[in-house]
Image 1 (cartoon, rainbow, N blue to C red):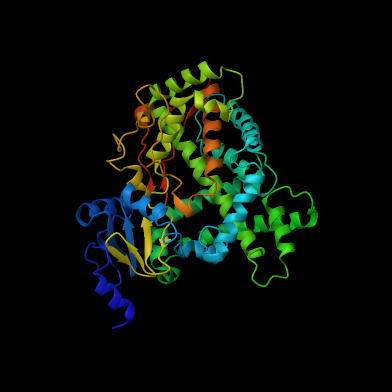
Image 2: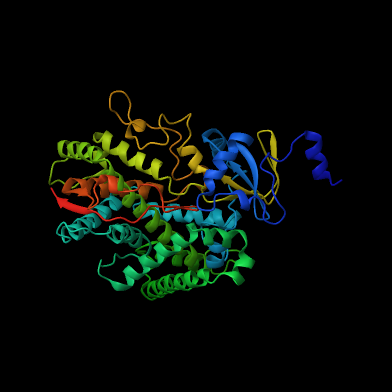
Length: 476
């Protein structure tokens, strides 16, 4: 018996329990393909908050509920800091970049990315001014609809994407720029594919799906267009680089690349630049714009919530002054609604998967090396011990008895610990400033009326994809 197995047996530790799995296909026959987290939640009633399931041949440990997820990601942060390889993402970035890298590469890139984004104003006044400027363009684009019904998807993604484009590429794009619009359409398709059953099957059986399905080939071709766009931006930056006056993330990365060109172990090279720029562009566009789109849907679905927010905004800011982040503390109801939108949307229900790089002892179990770990955010944002009405849209979750804003430690839409979202402060700022600016100037409704909107997701696998809908923006 190998020494490692002997130690496990001697210590009494074993794998967490879980449903009976079949060879090769694991638990796939009994899992909800369109919403795997629903199966995990159901199984946790039998097997507890730490359980083992098999997605195909891959062993996966699922952590359910606030206590288990917090204990892993925060209390045992070092053990749970590694990221699992996501086959579809790996096919695109080949292990480079920030999101799915590990070890020294991840540590260097995360430190550099956080520092650089903060230097360019992420979470600070400079970034606030960029978002305020972009809000003016967004408001103008809604004015131009003349209160006719529109699909808000690209109105919102253009505005959100321009903020991250200013940070990464040093420029914003005109809303009518056809190349820009095409890139946003590609991003939307990529996220939809990744959240579809086909996308999930690719991640479970990548080699098999290479031969059985052509849908991923079409998506990969379109991703190549984004990579070509980024490559061209990098070339432009190389030609115009001012070593003493970097204008954006790419400039800073190129300067570091030049400084470390003689270091054979450097992580500052073109592959990591391309992949990290793609990570920032993709995550910085889709997640926040999807949250905004869902927020407007819920405000139309619950018009009394929209009206109460507008009364608070009118009282604190008035009709003409530009909203600022300093207003947030004076807008507790508005702040509570924005937090509840994020909780209720639950945009990445399974979290981005983690990985055991070594045997991990957790609670009374051992999680063996090479196990994928899913610290399920859905189970935290719907934890019945943490939220009074977890299955209902209820802004009161974030308000105390006096109507003041109240934090909740189980509010984890950005995950937690060492792998929490690097753009959290930017996303929070965007959500607040864009939503307040929109409600200050418009009232939103649907041609189908509040009851015609369905807030349940179209897809709910890797990411939650809200259903498409149309809205009317009526100037106030």
